[in-house]
Length: 99
Image (cartoon, rainbow, N blue to C red; front, side):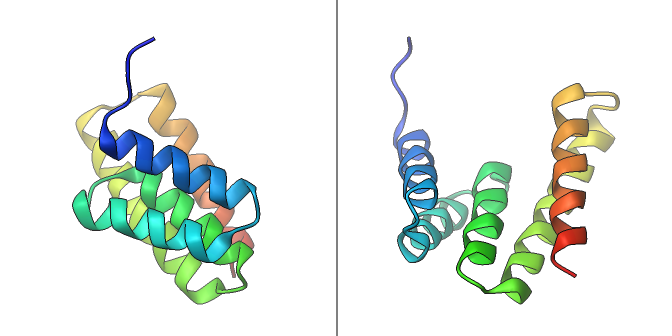
């Protein structure tokens, strides 16, 4: 198995914190990754989930909206990509739940 780079390690740490109920720490980690890579879909999706779990629905809606825009842009470049289509549906569901 290949070693993870620093960004992948940060994402993994953020997801671990989110799953462990440490939403504030997860939000900080996801924000740090997003700040370093504004096109990181994983960071925005995770950020939205952590914000929602922390009770911050407006910010989670914003993160999911920005995430969906990135996904749609990538789908425009790669029409029919199964992974992107799945992410698109998942993000649309999270947005619908956040209304």
